[in-house]
Image (cartoon, rainbow, N blue to C red; front, side, top):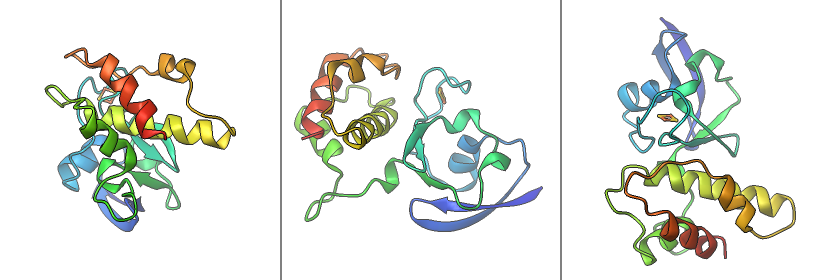
Length: 156
Ligand code: FES
């Protein structure tokens, strides 16, 4: 057992865990942060997608010992809300377009979407169809058409 310190959703935290435990289980089982979902556990389904230092990643594939003290982990619980609203613009778009069906993959979908929009903005451009084509988050309900529309709406 070892101590692991990092920033989670804007707060410094220290957690005791074996070095090889994957971050997803630290988040869900030890810290009670259940937005990132368990789907495959091997970096394929993207249900657990969260952000590390602003970029999308899969906490199911990263041992907690690989998280550095200055790393900032953000899960869907930590997405900043629009000023005067309760939710992030991407979440607002999701609700407006009624995207979710069973809902299980949706936190990961939204975290991927936010990272894509952020990357496009850093490159000085708007989100494009090719960005949406790159997304590998699996939705068993097949809500892909609504997801694409919501990402475009949430990017505005
Ligand atoms: Fe992490 Fe599937 S649970 S990618």
